[in-house]
Length: 192
Image (cartoon, rainbow, N blue to C red):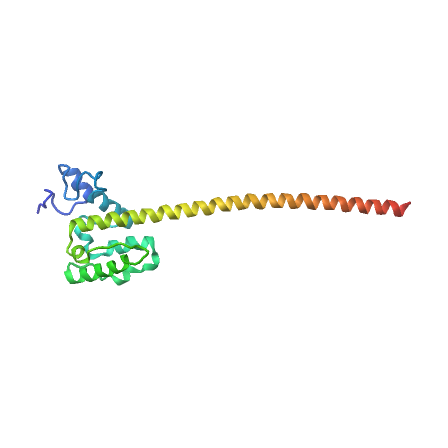
C-alpha cells in the first residue's frame, strides 16, 4: 500500500526526502530559519541512538527522549521509569509525565506539555527535540572542553614536574660536587 509520500512500505526519512518533491512529511520550513527540520532531527536522533524513527509522532512514547537525556546524565535512569513502547494514549501520557518531571528539575529547567507530546503534536515534538539536541550537543562540547583542559593541565603539570626534576638534579649535583670537594680537601689535609 502506498503511503502519503507516494512510497510503498515504510521508508527512511532520507528515502522519502530523496523520492519526494522537497516537501516531505518530515520537513518543516527550510530548516534554516526555524532551526533544523524534523527530517534532520530524526536523522540526528537515529544516528545518536542507532534507531530507525521515521516520523516525529513515533517519539510520543518518550523512549527516545529518555535515552537522549541519559547521554547527558547517565544517572537519570529515566528509561527505567518509561513503559515499553506503546500506542496506548494513557501509557504515553504516563511516560511523558515522567519525562516532564525530569525536565522540570533545576538541572534541565525546561517545560513541556506532556499531553500534547503524548498525542503526537508535531510542533511540540519538534520544539522538544530541538531543545534536547542542543542540550546533548552542549553537554558534549562541555565534556570535550573539560577533557581538553584536563589534558592541557596534565601536559602543563608534566612540564612543571620535568622542570622541578631538572632543578633538583642540578641542586643535587652541586651539593655532591661541593661535598666531593670538601672530602678531597679533608683527605688532602690528612695526608699532609
